[in-house]
Image 1 (cartoon, rainbow, N blue to C red):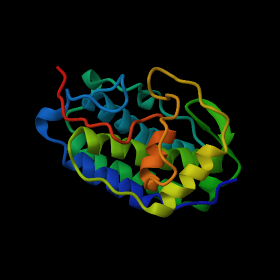
Image 2: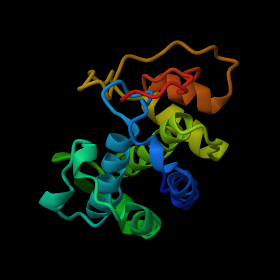
Image 3: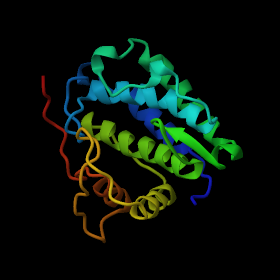
Length: 197
């Protein structure tokens, strides 16, 4: 069982990257092969509200069940995201959020595991978005190491629509964030400099 963690630093890091996304970047590729930047942002929009429901042991609102589609990205996302991410971290700051069971993506699981998956979403998608838009990104090393331990303890995750890929080999001596990115099926050396239209 994972111990409760403070998700505010990871949420703040993602919010910082989101506010720095250039206006012309939505059609750029990302390290997730099926996502362009706009798709990834739309996915983050849904998770930043939907995963609050997991913390509160509530069903995810139907309108927040999104697969990541830039065509459905609401135009006010820049204004909404900081508050949504703050609320997500606040919801998971409640001790009860990490207790018992909850639903995440319609799947019942331990709430403590759900909280770790939220942390993973924040850090991995924050890194992806930063790399895709040529921005710096950092995560607390303790959070990253905790995620490596957590994810390494799970059975292999099947590849799903290009979002969950087999782990990318990364040297054991690599920085922890690189090892986490490789563990989640992304290439930490992904360049992300070529726009796709």
